[in-house]
Image 1: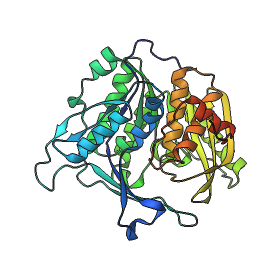
Image 2: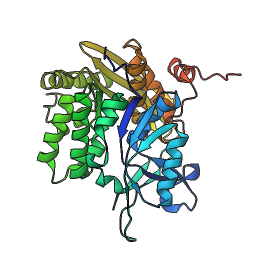
Image 3: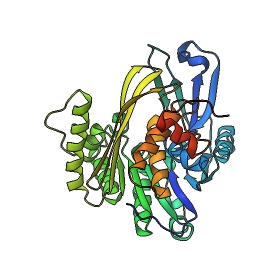
Length: 358
């Protein structure tokens, strides 16, 4: 079990770079659509939504563009998700200055797979720096049970890499548990491999919870991969276990390791599973069929559900079960973050009970 702080203002504190997501309506391709749905988004805030919608206090650390209507839109969205937020406001300066990232997302349909294009030029989140945040107040006075860090932010820019490392150090100093989703992206790492390997390794050494697939652990942390990988389900599970046993040796202070399993039948039908190691205890959820409206955010929903279960202090068997169900829930929504009505709704998904409730 993971012991959490008892004196705290926030259950979760999450550093992120917020942006907007544009998605064609009715599952249409982006390149031939003229009607788009806009939402505020980031992978990391998606994780926090599970806890915030279920009543836990969540705080977002981010950056904004001063006077921007997009910043206004994002702030309103975070408030609607029952999240607190803080962060500096940077001047746009000129039309080519700072702005929020734009995620162009074709959700796909049937046999046509999703396509996602990220436009991050001039992203204000690249400016995230601890000098703009009072970490002693956030972690020492206000207090947080868990801080959730993502490799997407840790690799976004040299400034954000140091930002995430400084936050991990401050959290560790004040007894806040650290969750780290490795989230390797080759384009973010290009030309910075040695620098980022050192930063990711230190954050991982401070972390209590590590999330990632085999590629993440190999490319982010330099962990040797399995000698033989199986293409079938049992082979993938054995391969992940073999990998984690090596990670445990390299990072002995980490308590929890997790990954999701996904097999794509079609864009709208997936087989969804998960693996979790908690100390010497293994929990395997073999993939089960789920319906999918939009797959983006399912992995974040899984992490969000796991962190909620840990914060609630449930028995360890329930951690991956609740995460599996909140990930499946996110895949049924037009937003890329889960919005659970209550715990009962999530457990009904886990039990496979889709009957109408009156």
